Image 1 (tube, rainbow, N blue to C red):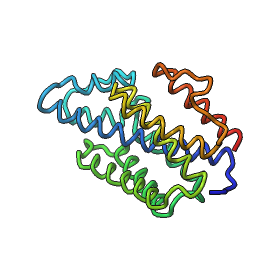
Image 2: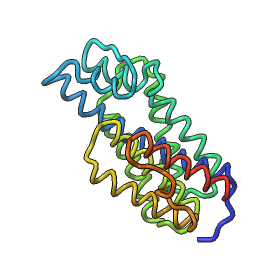
Image 3: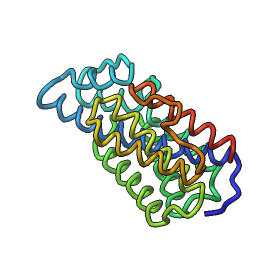
Image 4: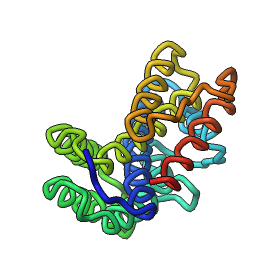
Length: 221
């Protein structure tokens, strides 16, 4: 696993993982809320975006898709994807060739959605999720052979924890993911112990401890 990795590349790989997981998680939630708006609860999208601290207003289910994906707010997926693309370019030499191509294709899809004068096609969500699955699949086939692979995986796992805490999902699975994060920490820095001197008793503390540990690893890398 020995690899020369600058702090800049390590940071870029980490944030690439976070952005991709954030986009994927958000798309799944948009998909569920869209169905609820049509069939069950017209306010489902409002409730969803309150979890992102966003006051989202829409008129119809189609308008919800437009506002959620390309609206003028901090969870705009086209902007997130631009950030992911920039991080991918910085760390290009450390990314699987097929995965890099799919990242570019995913960015093109979101930028086209952002610029299109017509309503977003519901099928575009499926296209985006399919591309993200292909990216993760390419990464899984590659395996964790280098430090850069672990930083990408860390980004994915940390964002998954953030989502689970935000949506109050089961604590058992969240604890399993945190343990996986800690295992990667120990691979990258055997002397680092996530629990040492750090209380994981609240959601805020948990993310603070994880982020502080990541900062230490990147600085020392």
